[in-house]
Length: 403
Image (cartoon, rainbow, N blue to C red; front, top):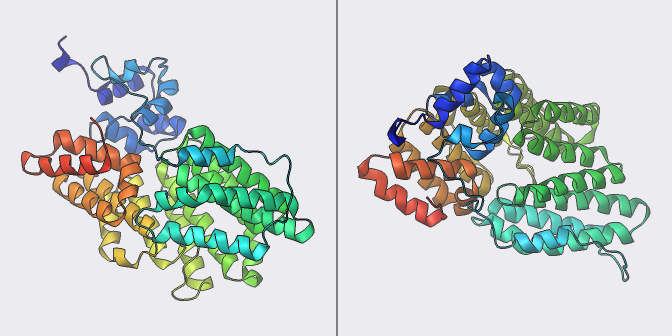
């Protein structure tokens, strides 16, 4: 068989799935992917990424990923874009303050520093560079405070330390070592538990769920989110906006987690989040750290529709959402990437490229470090019509995507 006759990676997945006696739905459930994702990989509408291959391989009895990609495909372990500040963030995460002296920063100072860092994350067009600049010092300062304070001030400083770890997780998610991301999750949860603060514990559970979902452990993510809702729900009526904000965010995370596995029950969680925002939060409310708001609820609806493989529903919901109302530059950039994914599902190359260009104009680092955006740009460079291929190559050069 010549190289031109070699089966595609998608065809290889389908053959192995059938040989194993698995339906697409069963393979999806076992691997932590959605049934739609498996379908699109098999029919060539979505590329087989290294991450998806790693999730599928054990279920298909594959020990060598070459059995999925074939002999004509080379895999580089050095192609993942990284950020220059990762080294300093790693140093701050793995430094231990064994001997400490001096006075810790006040709780008010720590809270202001944390809030300022999150505000910068959501308003800067280059949020990863901005976060990379402040994270090492922020981690050092909050770690020292958690060691040097005592009593209620120590508990408050531990809750703020958890927030510093959460920001580090957001920074590292797309370009840090996976072990470092796990470290931020574990440290964030440990700090929240030591603070004995239900709100901090729920926030740490939210961040843990995102990572669990990303590595195919969706059932565990949903269980952690369910436990966190149990901490928050009894306190929403009397606790004020931050408790309602947290409850809505937990439901949104559950909705996206279900959607990623092809579970239509995602819409039930999404509806629950929408009701909390509509009934318990004032008009115009925007959460400081996760940007919970009415526009963000709409953004999640589009993300769920895309992950459920329903581009028509995604476009219907996107029709009434003005991206300018999304209260975060970073989330607005990701929104354009989601719209590009919807167009990509329909094979609309021109629309996909246009939307990726809008994402790049909004938040260049979101496109540069988003695995989904990088994959789409790479495919456009090879598959787009000649009339727009030059534009795709220009975008690839801007974001540093390599062939």
